Amino acid sequence: MTERLPFQGVAQEIYRPQKANYDVTLLFPVLFLVGIGIVMIYSSSSALAMKKFGSDLFFLKKQGAFAIVGIVALVICRHVPYHWYRSLAYPFILISMVLLAAIHVTPLGYAAGGSARWLRFGDFSFQPSEFARLALVIYLAYSLSKKGETIREFTIGFLPHVVVFAVFALLILFEPDFGSMVILGAITWIMLFIGGVRILYLSSAVLLLLPAAYLFMMKAQYRLRRLVSFMDPWAYPGDEGYQIIHSLLAFGSGGIWGVGIGNGYQKLFYLPEPHTDFIFSIVGEELGLVGVLSILGLYGLIVWRGIRIAKKTVDPFGTYLAAGLTVAIGMQVFVNMGVTLGLLPTKGLALPFLSYGGSSLLLNMASIGILMNIDASPNKLVTVGINGR
Image (cartoon, rainbow, N blue to C red; front, side, top):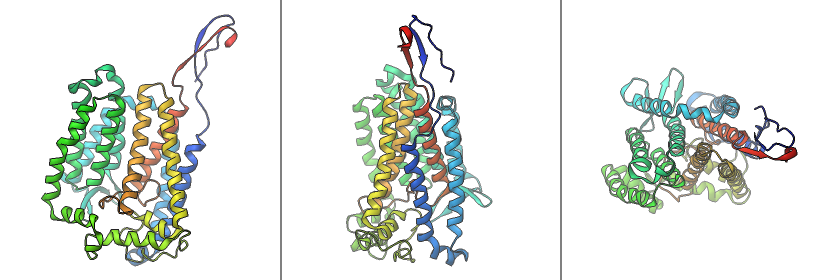
């Protein structure tokens, strides 16, 4: 952006120039996680890929292609001015709802593992809930930034945002994908809290949702058994407790240094989805406590950097957008790791940048690119006094 230079002896306002470089503090941990993810995906999926597709490189090749597309998305979003997303807030919301509905009402809907979460176009599949998460963050950032002091009013600051979330939640529950719904709910609640919505409304919403959550759990026996097995997985070793037991066995056998990349045991058809939902368990087994803490440190660096970007951004839309994107990535990490460590009931959710999957990697890499653009953009006017001081 062109800088307006002050004349000598005249106080004038100039725009802070846009940074041309990439935020290494944010870029390094992301690329490092993607690289680790490619290695661990091959390690965890080679036996499965050989059995199902006749090639141990099947998932490795696809994830490598996903990574290249994801890096391209990051670079593009880094250079697209984040202000442009203001005008895309409502179109993105509409597109997300159409895509989520298309899973159920068109032949493009594709089911796997008992859930219909994907749209399939030939050999290409896409998970609309991943795009819905980004769309919701952009919508909330735009809506919160334009409401000002009226954000504290029930019908302006609280109700419209909850209605949008509720539509998303219903469409996702039909899949069903309870994990994604929880993520969207947490993002909505935290962003509304940051935006200044009255805590009375937010706390009341949580209390009102508890009976609905109870009925939802009671409606399907498998959900109830999953919750009970979460309390004591060893009591259900052959069914609902099976995944978490083998996940814990993976972490336990890893010790401090791990058994070595490629030497894990649980990926050999014991732990389901070792390259997707439970890849962190394979990390714990093959890289040990050192690997687990290293991964946690990299995610911590990403979240810390995202919070810093949000705090120093003067533009309200940029602040809310950076905060929402950071919360979205952090919540995915929290839920996935909580599940694999037995701290949360089992939910099917990818670990950002590490798990196999194009939709997750693409949208999370795009989110990082947007964060970088917010950080690099001129967010405020700087007053320059006499002689440019």
